Image (cartoon, rainbow, N blue to C red; front, side, top):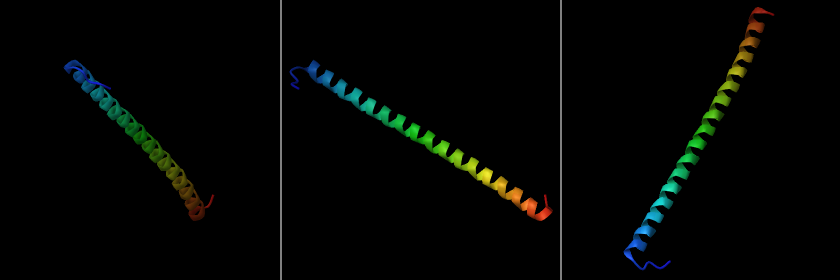
Length: 67
């Protein structure tokens, strides 16, 4: 790309600035999406742990106090 005038240089600078902004925004979207996935996985694992805990408590009460 040839830059023949100050207007060309300014336009090129603006173009590069817009590209950088778009890259940063894309990275932020990816990070927030990754963050949401991690939160969902954590909630799922906590939910599964609660199910296991409930099953263990149930078995414990059955063993201690009968059915």
